[in-house]
Length: 383
Image (tube, rainbow, N blue to C red; front, side):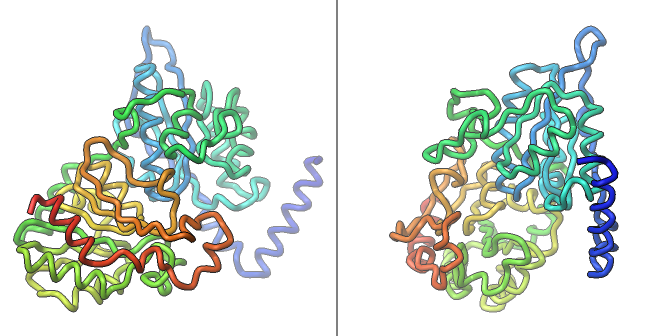
């Protein structure tokens, strides 16, 4: 494709966006955010080797990339490891001591030839002169970005095929060039900042212990409609029943989530004693949410990013598991006590299949009953 041809088509695409009223919104969001973290110097005053890890998924996906980052750094302590991830992922990992620099990409689906953000990002990547990149995304747009940035070597699932029988962390490590992994290699890295820990302590101070977090929501705002009745969702009545039982055993309930989960959390909270419940949904930054989860004595969640956060932070965890692929993406830790409740219905897992979009009744979640959740919670609390 010649330069003139590309420009012509870009201008046509821009004109169509303007007519649709969308181009102005795209311009506002087309920014590349670069967050410096740890400054690492090489031996003898020379430049350190640099490696880029690419994982731009949701919070749980981002956390499952942290074992790769740690392994890359530990394999060569003078190496700088940078990360390209989502905006939420950047907020989650801004305190990660193994990461030198973070890039974010907001409009990942926009074609490269019309994306100012991607062109700027490709230049930044090219200027960093990476030895290689570890690509933990399968969508072609990410490989295209790295190729346009003239990466000398790309390691990913094209080079080391994804094994569906193995956990995603194991597959991520294999893609990065680490075929053998022990249990300690699979631990995810996450820590609460001092400010987040103080915020959480102040927010929870009025509640009697033990503090039990309940996370009823999942996914982005576009999936919030009828969320408790679909896919990974569990009904508000079920959560209320569990919360009442645990409050009756002396616990307090902390309801976490995004602003999109606020309605669900308010519904649950309205049926509980006001002096034994705190609604944090929509009230915390990602960093503050890390602080809250770290402070809890127990976390109960549907399959969600915060469930992975609890596993990484060492907070005992009960997960209500439905349609996702348990072998590949369950919260994983050799040190955090985790109970996964799974009804094992015939139609699950359905993620990534046509059945997922056809599902009108999530029996995989319906068949997880409140008494089983209470029993698992009390067991982890030692009661």
